[in-house]
Structure formats: structure tokens, C-alpha cells
Image 1 (cartoon, one colour):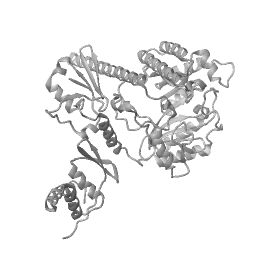
Image 2 (cartoon, rainbow over the protein chains, first blue to last red):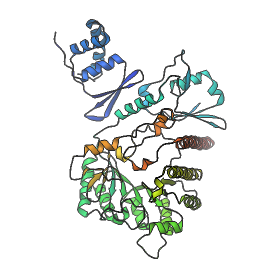
Image 3 (cartoon, helix red, strand yellow):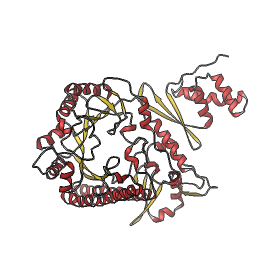
Image 4 (tube, rainbow over the protein chains, first blue to last red):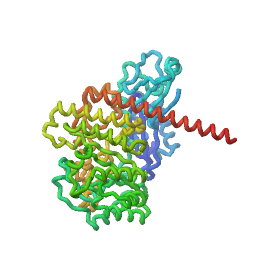
Length: 92
Length: 453
């Protein structure tokens, strides 16, 4: 299976506030383009994985490990979120 | 319910607090209440919101839902300080690094026409910024500021002692299409009518800080200007009047030591009469730099006495309508001052760069180099560590002190915290009264419009 490398189009910093994770996305080419995402803990882990340069397979494995679930479930959980990030121009 | 001041935008990122019906709620540490004639003011020091509620509204359950969702009330076991720290970390992510340098403190000279005994620059070699360095400063500003409006604070020595540099820099920025404005720290002795006009037209001077050390005799003796046979006090007061009439905001700094509190109180009385009705005139008592020039001012009991005296003078100034920070803070504080602001540098007369006027040990580079001393920058950014009392202090979100700052030598204590709280309450009242005045003006204008129709 082909592993998909993903590239973040924004610089990403994630801050935990109470039980939420707030991601601040800043566009290195346009200082006025800053976005904020409200994430849950799983989405934050996925986004951190992309930030670390993991491909999609590696991220599924990581999520499965962290949450002690099977990879198929992890894949289902993460695929939708990654697609969302792509649809919103955050990841390519 | 009336929203007098809105929440800061960052609260949108966090979202509302969701009520949990199984939990007991209490006021968050940063919620301050103040009774007014017809209701109650509620201020959230963390989110910066100010509300007016009638007493009936406060008892209303629907209102309580609002207070919970907007972080005025939190669960019993909530960790307020941790929440503040998380919000501070979040807001700091929006602070852009490498965004250009567009705040400049320019030391036009290290020389001065006064001989104040307490001057912290006494031992420094006296020389003006040369013509060449002045030209190079202009090039530096144009290169580094990007498209930002440039804000310059003229400093020294006495900056007017080399006003030629000010003229050159402002003319050059104007010719190069750079948008700018300026403020100044000066003894104001050298102003005259022509210079006041130039300060408006060319320097675009908005604000000036002028030190007055006491009433006439005390001031003239303390300042010991190099000019003989002149009443410097009268001249400076006259210049303050000219500046105010030209539209420049004037902040009078009062230098407090362990011996002059009474005299400064007398001075506030004099200034309050002389500048009555001037709405851009402010009085700001401050401790003298470091040890105030008297050895015994270092003792804890003396520092405490100084603190008390300073706060009394601040209160007096505020009651007379000349308090510097009359209204509530409306922004989330993420840095202290120029020392920890990445878009700010000081340029010394020789072209060296510093982070603060107390620049000993804080030289970070030069206008002739693109690199900075990162170790100094990192040191300047370090905050004072929290003390146990910070955990329950209502003022914590407004409190941002740096380790390097000599002006923070007075440590926090119970008296200080109580007076800070009183200060916030006064600011709540001032902010509310300003709101009511604006409402009244709008109502009057609407009435006039209706009549005209």
C-alpha cells in the first residue's frame, strides 16, 4: 500500500486549554493568514503526527498505539480528519 | 444586562464554558464585583469583559448561565491559575516573531542640560549621535520596519539637546514615505513656540513624559540646570501648557524617594489647579531608579513606606482626574514592555542596540549588524516566578513582571495586592462612567436629530 506523505501548509502550534486543544496555524508566506482550530485530544495527536513528518500509515499506527485500539479503527478515525484538513487547505 | 467592555478575541478560540449541572460553582478568582447606584458591575480580569447587571438580573438563573458560559463562575475545584497560564500560552502563540522592528527608542544624545543627582546615566560618556550615525539609523529603520507604521520614542540624556538628529530622522522618513509618529521623554526645558510647532508638524509628537521632582524650589535645586539666572520650573510649566494647547498628551512623572512624598503631594495640588480641565494631562508617581539615591531606601520597611506613599500619590492624582491608567485594561497582557517586545529596540548614540533604557548588560547588537545576542534577548524575556499568593490574586492577569527589571525591585505584598484590587475597582467605575457619558451624548444627538426631522 502506498504511504502518503503529507505536508503542512501552515506552521502549527497546539496549546492545551482545559480539556480542549487549540491549534494556531500561521501561514509563513502571509502574516495576516492565521487560523485557529478547536481540536479534541485525538485530532491534536493526528495533527502532531503530521507535524512530525509521519505519513498516513505511521499516523494510524501511532493512534492505535496511544488509544490501544486496532489499526482499522484508528484508520477510520483519522482518515476523515486528515481529509478535512486537506479540504480546508491545511495539509497537502 | 449591559456589556460595557467586550471580551478579548482569544476567548472565542476557547469558546464558552459548558455548564455541568452536577457541579457547584463559585466566582472565579479574576471576577471582581463593584456595587453602583442602580446595580452591580462585574469585571472579568482574565477576559477583560465588564458587565453592568441590575440586582434582579444577578439573581436570575438565566443570568447565572451567562456568567458560567463567560467564565465569571467556575466549578469549585477549578484551577484558576492553571487556566490563566494556559490562556497566556495560547495568546503568546499569536505573538509573531521576526515580524520586523517598528518600535524604536532613539537616544539622540547621552548628554543633558540638567544635573539631577539621581541620574542613572551619570557615569556614561557624554556625546551626541553623530550625523553619520543618524543617517545610518534612518537606513536601519527603513530596512527593518517593513510596511509597519514606525513608532519612535525620543530619549537621551536630554533628547532635545540634539534635536537636529530628530529633525533629520523625521525628514528622511517623510521623504521615504514611511508612516511614523513619536513620543518623548524629556525635561522639556528647551521647548519654545517654534519647537512645539515643529514637534507637531514634523516630529508627529503625540505624548511626552516630563519629570517634575517637586515644587518650584525643590525642582530647581534638584535639576540644577546648566543655565544660570533662570527659573527652570516656571519655564517648564509654561512649556507644558504650550504642549497641551498644541494637542500633545503630557505625562508628568513624579520621582518619589523616602523624603519627598509630602512635597510631591503639594505639587499634585498645584498641578491640579494649573492644569484643571486639561484632559490630556496625566500625573504618574514613580520610584526613583534603583536605590533612589539614598542608602536607607533599600531597607524593607522603607520600601514598604515608599510603596504606600506612591499609591497614595497615585490615588490623589486619579481623584483629581489626572490618573494615568484611569480605565480598565482592554487587552490581554502578553508582554511587559520594550524589553520583552521583539518588535522593539533602543538605538544608542553610537549605533549600538539595546532592549531598555536601563541598558547596562543589555546590548543586543548594532545597526551595523543583522545578528542579535540571543542570550540577552532570552534573559530579557524571563518573567518573575510566581509566589504562592499568585494562586488567588485577582490581579494576576494584569501582572507581568520581568526578572531583569530593576523597577520591579519592590516585591509584591499584601498591601500591594489590596491596593491593586482597589485600583481595578476605581478603573471599573471610571470605565462605566465613561460609558454612561457616551450613552448620554448619543441620546442627546438622537434627540437633536428627531427634532430636526
